[in-house]
Structure formats: C-alpha cells, structure tokens
Amino acid sequence: MKQQWSREQASVWSQQQGWICGFNYLPRTAVNWTELWQRETFDAPTIDQELGWAHEAGYNQLRINLPFIVWQDDRDGLLARIDEFLAIAARHQIKVMLTLMDDCGFSGDEPFLGPQKAPEPGKHNSQAAASPGRDVVCNRDMWPEVERYVRDIVRYFRTDERIAIWDLYNEPGNRGTFASGLEEVSYDEKLEVFALELMQKAFVWARDEDPLQPLTVCAWHFSQDPDEPENEFFTHPIDVEAAKLSDIISFHAYVATPKLLQALRFWQKFD
Image (tube, rainbow, N blue to C red; front, top):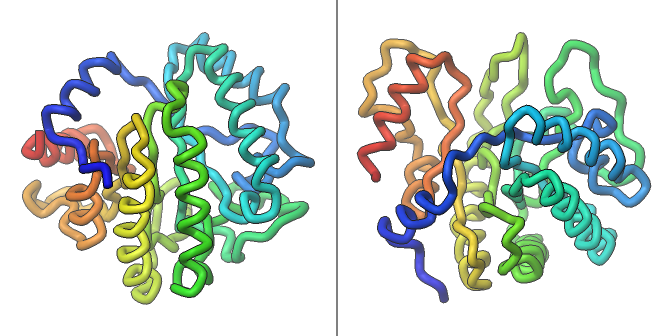
C-alpha cells in the first residue's frame, strides 16, 4: 500500500501549487450534487458559462462532490460526465478537488435518484443530499459497495492532472442544519461512530490505488466561541484522526477573519 505523504512531500506539493484561490461549486440549475451529476440534468452549457465567470474573477480551483447513488445506477455515465466536467474546468484553467463522500444531508432525506425536490426559499443548501447517505454509512454490510465506489473513482482518475486533491469525506458525522447563514450542528452519535471508522477505511482504499494527488479529509468541529483557547481547536476525535491520516491538512471554519487567523495559527504547528 502507498504510504502517507511525508511533511517534505506535502511541502514540495504546496510550493508547486502557487496561490490557490478556490470555491465550492454547484451550478445554478442543480439543487444538489445528485441533480448535477445525473444524466438527465447534467448541464454542461451552464457549467461552462459559470466556470468562465469564475476564471475571469481570478479563481483557479474548485471543490465539488460526487454522488454514490449515481455511481451505483450509472457508473459509466458518471465517469464520462466527470471527465467532461474536468475538461470544462481545464479550459478555464481551473483544477478540481473531488469529494467522494459527504454526511451533510441537510434536506433530511436519504439520497434518492430522479427529480429532486425544489429548493426552499431562504434556506441555504435546503436539498443537500449526502453521499452515500446515513443509512449506508451506518450499515457495515454496505461498505464493500462503498469500497468499490471509492476505489473505482480514484483508480480511474489517479493520474489525471486536472484533479488537484482528493477530498475523501466532507464533514464526516455532520447532520446539522443551516439557519441565517450559520451552521447549527446537531450531533448524531451513532453516525459519528460509523463515520470515523468509514473515514479510516476510505484512506486505506484510496491510498491503495496509489493516486498522484494528495488525500485529505477536513477537520470541521469548530466552535463559534470567541474565547475558546487556540490549543483547543479541532480536538474532536474525527478531526484529530482526519489530520493524522491526511497527506495535506484541510479544515472548515465558518467564522470571521480574527477567528480564522487563530485557526491558521493552530494548524501551522503541524507544518
């Protein structure tokens, strides 16, 4: 099995990237990533237009999620659409961070194929669909299928220079909801237990496919408390394990600049 990157490898990679200016991406014609990636609703013209705008604004990288259920239903079609998406992004000089799994099913529904529900006005990510979904994450009997998915996607694109980073699992364990633009996290202890184990296995599966790109999972349990000491940031077991396993560290912090600078100082200790 391929080994985790050393700090020296991560440093060399970082120096080669230059200044990364990126964004999370979902086109205006899709309510979630299931709708984006399905055959009937994949909207290449809109994606091309919007990534053109992004390039003009100075962006050079984006992050986007993939849906396990679309892979199950239409594996070859999904791979072809990912390739088409990467080609569009490359035309606009934008590299892509592909995210394979995601627990943020803020719609409250398990992911489903076909027409998606309409967005709820005024609610951010109102129809966000998880991947593979809580029911699969909490059912170890389904994990061999998840393993096939992770390995298949990574193996297919493991040498593709249009991909900058593999984000294996967005915010594992997060079943929070959004209100007024701020995340309110409601903890699901069962999901967190399974998500931690599944995240660990995902690193093994992906690393075993020997991708050229670095692997990461974000730390995300970030307190909104302005008085929290810096040395207590990101101490949740999932965050600690994500940082230990990642080739390069990534984290999510929906906070104002002073708090974000504190978080950056916290991570600087890890080089």
